[in-house]
Length: 229
Ligand code: SF4
Ligand code: FES
Image (cartoon, rainbow, N blue to C red):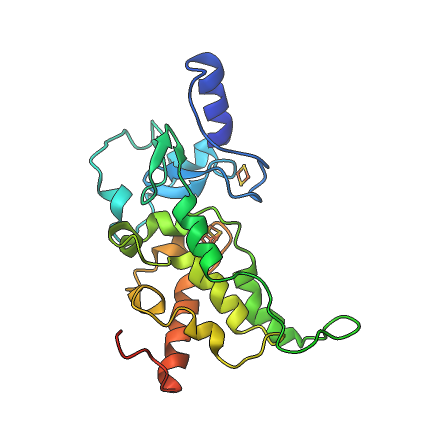
């Protein structure tokens, strides 16, 4: 039984007012992310048995991990709403800030030249490079586990930065570095402290910490690091 199925069971048998989000039930839509035993996970992909039997995942302290709720590990599964976003009801959080920052990085392809008549041809290596960043399902688990996002509401956050980097290295864009400059601010690339919880909890293996590190290195190397950061 998955945690999502368990929540349906709770709703059916004990409390039909229990609120939680879901849609695809197949780890595709990203809407069922919640804190499960103090780790952000997708409820539809998380097996109750596996959580009961697993060792607790080691993460750097973040807002949700610090709250003093106790539960009997191995006997009970603790479910809580994602931290770092305002709670609306039960397991449902307000995702507005997450999506606002995601939109801020303009997550659409901006071709550098007139698109070709037929398809773009890309070398496999270029595709391999950007592919990990295309797998994001916007679940906000990374933002929930990020210690910086927890105390700095202005930080763009791991998902938005990973998506921005994905376009910065896309050879179909201009490659003039303007994408990197979009987050060349104290609340963009430079706010990250590399706790790497984002990478550890991402259900799709997206590595925002790698994207941020590479973006910073590139800006530094080209002498374009913003003076105020
Ligand atoms: S990067 Fe991973 S954890 Fe963050 S929103 Fe995307 S899928 Fe979720
Ligand atoms: S219900 Fe869609 S990811 Fe879980």
